[in-house]
Image (spheres, rainbow, N blue to C red):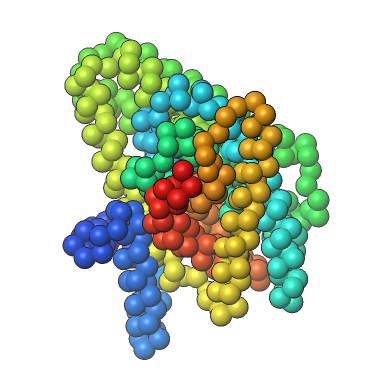
Length: 410
C-alpha cells in the first residue's frame, strides 16, 4: 500500500473516532479517540476469530504504518515543539531543580527499580527473563509521555507550580529515557552482559548534549530570521522549516531531535514571541501549531488503540500487565518521593505534590513505540503486552481521574 493511502486511511479513522467521541462518548478528545479506537480494535479481533483474513489484513496495514518510526522520528519532535511554544521559560527557570532531578535522576531510579522488581515478578511466576530485558522494560516504561501529559493537563486544573513541574519533566525526560533505552538496546544487540560506562557516556553526550546544542543553534537562527520580517505567512513558514529541518539535522548527526525541538520551541515561544513577532503573527502562529498539535494527537492516539491488534495476547501476559501497573506506580512514587524529600530542605512544594506527580506521570505512545523497537526474541511479546496494558491503564484511568486526584490531594 502506498504511503499516501496509509495516511489517508489513518486520517479517516481518526476523524471517525473523533466524531463518535464527540457525539456519544464525551471523553476528553485524546482519551476519547483512543478509547473508541481501542473498542474498534477489540471488535476487529472478535471478527477476526470468524474471518481470519480480516485480522491478517488489518495487521498488515498497521505494520506498514511503522508506528515506532512515525512517533519517535517525526511526530514526537513536532509535538514537543508545539508544546514548548506555550511554556513560560521563566516558570521553568523557577522550577529548574525539581524538573532537572525528576527528568534525569528520577528516570534512572525508576529504570533500575522497575528492572529489579520486574525480574523478581517474572522469577516468582516461573518465567526466566534476562536482566537486560528487564532493564529495557524499565527504560521504556519510566519516562512520562509528553503527548499524553500535555493533552490532559489542559483541562486537569493542576496548581501552577505542579503543572510546570509535570510539563517540564515530560518535555525533557523522554529524551533521557530514549538515550538510556538506546544504550541498553545496544548492549542487548551486542550481547554484552554488563554496560560499558564509556560508551553510555559517549551516547548520552552525543544524543542529549548534541540535541540541546542543535536546538539552541537552530532556534537562535530562526529567531534572527523572524526579527527581520513582518509577514505572518513567512514567519509561520520559518517555524515549520525550523522543525522539519532541525529533525533532519538531528537524524543526520545522531542527536536527540525531541530535546532539540524542546529547546527551539522554548526559545521561539518566549524570546521569539516577545521580541520578533507582531500580534498578528503570534495569533496565526498559535493557531497553526495548535491545529498541528490537535491533528497529530488524534492520529497518534488512534494508533495507540489500533496497536492492540498486533499484540500477541496470552492470559498470563494480561495478568502480568495488571501486576506491572502496580509495580510501575510504586516505582514512580519512590523515584518522585525520594528526591522530593531531599529537595524539601531547600525549597517549598505544594500540598500533595508526591501523590499528584505520581498519578500524573502518564505513560503513552513513547513506551509502546520503544517496546515495538525491541529486537525479535522470545521475551518481546511479553514485554510488549505488559507495556500495552500499563499504557492503556495510564491514559484511560489515570488520565480520566487526574482532575479528581488533584482535588483530593490539594
